Amino acid sequence: MKFSVITLFPEIIEAGFSKGIVGQAQGSQLIQVECINPRSFTQDVHKTVDDRPFGGGDGMIMLAEPLAKSIESIQGPAHVIYLSPQGAPLTDRKAKELSQKTHLILICGRYGGIDQRLINSQVDEEISIGDYVLSGGELAASVLMDAVSRKIPGVLGNLTSSELDSFSGQRLEEPSFTRPREYLGQSVPEILLSGNHAKIQEWRKNLKDLVTLKKRPDLFGEKGPDLHHLKKFWSDLSESEKKSLGLQKFPQENA
Ligand SMILES: C[S@@+](CC[C@H](N)C(=O)[O-])C[C@H]1O[C@@H](n2cnc3c(N)ncnc32)[C@H](O)[C@@H]1O
Image: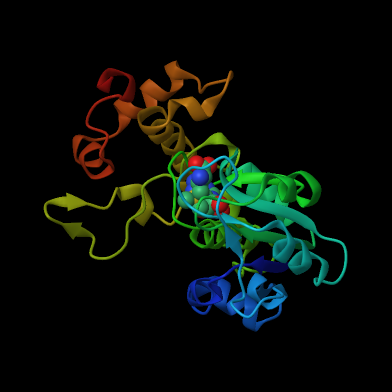
C-alpha cells in the first residue's frame, strides 16, 4: 500500500509515522508513505497556495492549481481522498475497504478548505474523521493511514489481531487483563487462568456481546444478541468477576 499525502505540513505526517506498528510497517516495506507539498507547484516568488474566497467570508481557500499539479506529479493510478469534515465517516468497514486498494492519495486541506472545483474534478471521495472541525487535514490523514494500515495483512504481525479488535463483527472487544492477578481488590476472572482455550474463547464471545450491549448497542444492527442467553451468562458470573469486568448490572438495566 502506498500513501501519497498532499500537505503543506509534511512534518506532521512524518512525526506520526516514524514510530510504532505503522513505523515498523514502513521499515518492512508493507506500506510506503510519501509527502507532496503543493508549494513546490506554485509559480510566484511567494509560493502562494491560497487566496481570499470569492463573495467574501472568513479564511483563505487553497488554490486548485497547486493541488491539481501535486496530484498529477504522483505516478500511477490511485484512489484520491480529500479529508474533510463534510465527508463520509471513517469507520472500521471503510478502513478495511480502503486497505484493499494499492495506492491512496490523501489531500489535506488547511485554512477555510479547498476550492470546490478541485474536489469536483479530482477527488474520488471525501472522508471525515468525526463531526468536528480540525485546523487541517494532516491529523485526519494520519488517523486514516493508521486505521487502514492495521487492516493490511502482515502489518500487525498477526492478521487475526485486527479481526478481534473492537468493531469487527459489529462488536466491541471484551475487557483485557494483565499482571498482577489482583489489583485494587479486583481479581482477574478465574477462567482466564484456566488454560482452557475453547472455554476462554466462548467466554470472550459472550463478553463481547455484553460489553457492546452496555456501551454501543447501536453496533448490533438489526440482529442483536440472544438476550435470554446473555442474561444467563451474566447471572452465572461471580460477584467478583462482575466487579472486575465492570458489569455489576446487566447492561440493559443500566439504561
Ligand atoms: C478548518 S478546516 C475547513 C472547514 C471548512 N471551512 C468547513 O466548514 O467545512 C481545514 C481542513 O481541515 C481538514 N478537516 C477539518 N476537520 C476535519 C474532519 N473532521 N475530518 C477530516 N478532515 C478535516 C480538511 O482537510 C479541511 O480542509
